Image 1 (cartoon, rainbow, N blue to C red):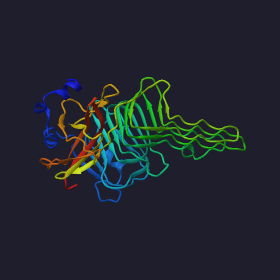
Image 2 (image 1 turned 180 degrees about the horizontal axis):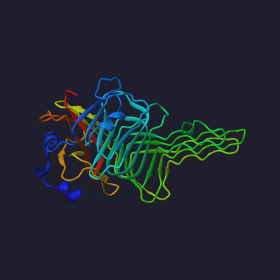
Image 3 (image 1 turned 90 degrees about the vertical axis):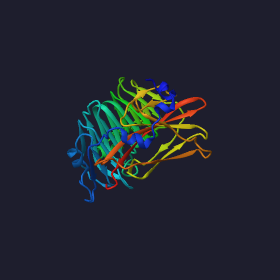
Image 4 (image 1 turned 30 degrees about the vertical axis):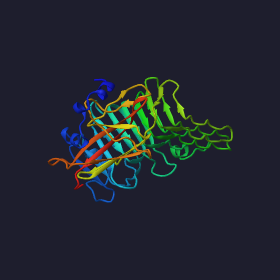
Length: 376
């Protein structure tokens, strides 16, 4: 069924309240593991927890410093989400690879130096990534990955000096904030800043390194769509015999980069909530416009015209008309979260808002929610 037909059918036939939809579909997660660097959880190491977790599990990560160990997610779906205030930070890397079609990886609230996504046929959602400290790196690299969505994140390429520890002669190039090869990416409300090139030596004569690109698309097979994003190339390095090149905001000599042209509506809500509580979804937009809440249990990616956006939920999904956006431009929609049934520890949902305005309908960015047992 087409997107437009599904939104125009009789509401009585299709609309399902969010709370009811939360329970009527099967859960995606089989178990929840608490990761806490202070020893208060099931694991102190996120790397160890990711290795031990089964396909479909949830890793609930408490803020803390997780050292330099690399997190490897190999051929399985996982949800890794921050729970609490503060950074989940590490100088290590996250490597997601070989994700089969039909599987999903959700990564939310992490502050790791580098994240690579390689040979992933399943779908990947990255939300709320940020550097562990100001001016530190938070790079993402996608190679041969079919469906990657990055939202509300701050990505930064590594500075040339940090790549090599400095050069005696020629300066090292800065890293790209987002590197894309043979992949399909959708970006929302994110910033991408290339790393700064390292300075070369003055005596003996050296050349400065190039700045990294904000977005670097390597090949013609890649497709990148974006909305409400900022791209900035890194500064060049200097040297006695020549300076490097400034990084490009967007470098895509062969790939396709498509700006989405619909209006920007900021959407926000907690990534994690316990059962039995009230969840607040905040929608910013033009007063009088009517939002529609779409909810599903799995991700999807259908590219519609740039003025409409990208649909991230598969059919069938639940739909619910919300109240019109009030005069102050901010709608706070409250959702009562029921208790989880039986012995289930978690359920995961992805939501997307359709905005109805006089000119037509268009989509806002997706947002995920993990509902947890209140004992966790």
